[in-house]
Length: 118
Image (cartoon, rainbow, N blue to C red):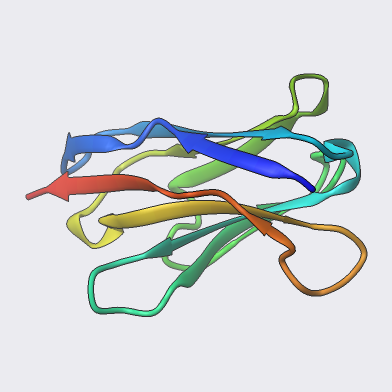
Protein backbone atom coordinates (compact mmCIF):
# COMPACT_ATOMS: atom_id res chain seq x y z
CA UNK A 1 0.00 0.00 0.00
CA UNK A 2 1.42 3.35 -1.05
CA UNK A 3 0.46 6.54 0.73
CA UNK A 4 0.77 9.83 -1.12
CA UNK A 5 0.65 13.24 0.51
CA UNK A 6 0.48 16.40 -1.59
CA UNK A 7 1.48 19.79 -0.29
CA UNK A 8 2.36 23.23 -1.60
CA UNK A 9 -1.00 24.47 -2.76
CA UNK A 10 -2.26 27.94 -2.00
CA UNK A 11 -3.48 31.23 -3.36
CA UNK A 12 -1.43 32.99 -6.02
CA UNK A 13 -1.99 35.84 -8.44
CA UNK A 14 -2.13 35.42 -12.19
CA UNK A 15 1.36 35.00 -13.54
CA UNK A 16 2.70 33.64 -10.29
CA UNK A 17 4.27 30.31 -9.49
CA UNK A 18 3.73 27.44 -7.09
CA UNK A 19 5.48 24.14 -6.59
CA UNK A 20 3.51 21.15 -5.42
CA UNK A 21 5.10 18.18 -3.68
CA UNK A 22 3.96 14.57 -3.65
CA UNK A 23 5.60 12.56 -0.89
CA UNK A 24 5.26 8.78 -1.03
CA UNK A 25 5.60 6.14 1.63
CA UNK A 26 4.90 2.45 2.01
CA UNK A 27 5.91 1.23 -1.42
CA UNK A 28 8.60 1.02 -4.06
CA UNK A 29 8.29 4.58 -5.27
CA UNK A 30 11.14 4.18 -7.70
CA UNK A 31 9.16 1.61 -9.68
CA UNK A 32 6.10 3.81 -10.16
CA UNK A 33 5.11 6.32 -12.77
CA UNK A 34 3.76 9.49 -11.16
CA UNK A 35 0.81 11.35 -12.60
CA UNK A 36 -0.60 14.77 -11.80
CA UNK A 37 -4.28 15.58 -12.16
CA UNK A 38 -6.56 18.45 -11.27
CA UNK A 39 -10.23 19.04 -10.75
CA UNK A 40 -11.92 22.40 -10.98
CA UNK A 41 -15.29 23.03 -9.33
CA UNK A 42 -18.09 21.52 -11.38
CA UNK A 43 -15.71 19.84 -13.78
CA UNK A 44 -14.29 16.38 -14.20
CA UNK A 45 -10.80 15.54 -13.09
CA UNK A 46 -8.30 16.09 -15.86
CA UNK A 47 -4.80 14.95 -16.62
CA UNK A 48 -2.01 17.47 -16.11
CA UNK A 49 1.27 15.63 -16.55
CA UNK A 50 3.26 12.53 -15.82
CA UNK A 51 6.82 11.42 -15.18
CA UNK A 52 8.20 7.94 -15.61
CA UNK A 53 9.90 5.87 -12.92
CA UNK A 54 13.38 7.21 -13.58
CA UNK A 55 12.46 10.80 -14.23
CA UNK A 56 13.82 10.59 -17.72
CA UNK A 57 10.52 11.01 -19.51
CA UNK A 58 7.72 13.48 -18.97
CA UNK A 59 4.48 14.26 -20.75
CA UNK A 60 2.07 17.16 -20.31
CA UNK A 61 -1.41 18.20 -21.24
CA UNK A 62 -1.45 20.86 -23.92
CA UNK A 63 -3.04 23.30 -21.50
CA UNK A 64 0.06 23.33 -19.26
CA UNK A 65 2.85 22.49 -21.68
CA UNK A 66 5.66 25.03 -21.45
CA UNK A 67 4.43 26.31 -18.07
CA UNK A 68 4.48 23.26 -15.78
CA UNK A 69 7.42 20.97 -15.06
CA UNK A 70 7.32 17.74 -13.13
CA UNK A 71 10.36 16.14 -11.56
CA UNK A 72 11.17 13.50 -8.97
CA UNK A 73 13.85 12.34 -6.59
CA UNK A 74 13.53 8.63 -5.89
CA UNK A 75 15.99 8.84 -3.02
CA UNK A 76 13.54 11.18 -1.31
CA UNK A 77 10.40 9.33 -2.46
CA UNK A 78 9.09 12.64 -3.70
CA UNK A 79 7.82 14.16 -6.92
CA UNK A 80 7.18 17.82 -7.65
CA UNK A 81 5.05 19.84 -10.00
CA UNK A 82 6.47 23.28 -10.66
CA UNK A 83 3.75 25.56 -11.99
CA UNK A 84 4.71 28.83 -13.64
CA UNK A 85 2.79 31.59 -15.38
CA UNK A 86 -0.34 30.50 -13.58
CA UNK A 87 -3.73 31.44 -14.95
CA UNK A 88 -7.16 31.56 -13.28
CA UNK A 89 -8.15 28.49 -15.28
CA UNK A 90 -5.43 26.55 -13.45
CA UNK A 91 -7.51 26.80 -10.29
CA UNK A 92 -8.53 23.47 -8.81
CA UNK A 93 -7.63 20.64 -6.50
CA UNK A 94 -4.41 19.01 -7.63
CA UNK A 95 -3.75 15.34 -7.08
CA UNK A 96 -0.79 13.10 -7.56
CA UNK A 97 -1.16 9.41 -8.31
CA UNK A 98 1.12 6.48 -9.04
CA UNK A 99 0.88 3.38 -11.14
CA UNK A 100 3.11 0.44 -11.86
CA UNK A 101 3.12 -1.62 -15.01
CA UNK A 102 -0.63 -1.49 -15.46
CA UNK A 103 -2.71 1.27 -16.95
CA UNK A 104 -4.72 2.06 -13.85
CA UNK A 105 -3.62 4.76 -11.45
CA UNK A 106 -3.43 2.68 -8.31
CA UNK A 107 -2.89 5.11 -5.47
CA UNK A 108 -3.96 8.71 -5.04
CA UNK A 109 -3.12 11.51 -2.70
CA UNK A 110 -5.70 13.57 -0.87
CA UNK A 111 -5.26 16.62 -3.09
CA UNK A 112 -4.12 20.17 -2.50
CA UNK A 113 -6.03 23.31 -3.44
CA UNK A 114 -4.55 25.76 -5.92
CA UNK A 115 -6.33 29.06 -6.45
CA UNK A 116 -5.17 31.59 -9.01
CA UNK A 117 -6.70 35.02 -8.64
CA UNK A 118 -7.19 37.35 -11.60
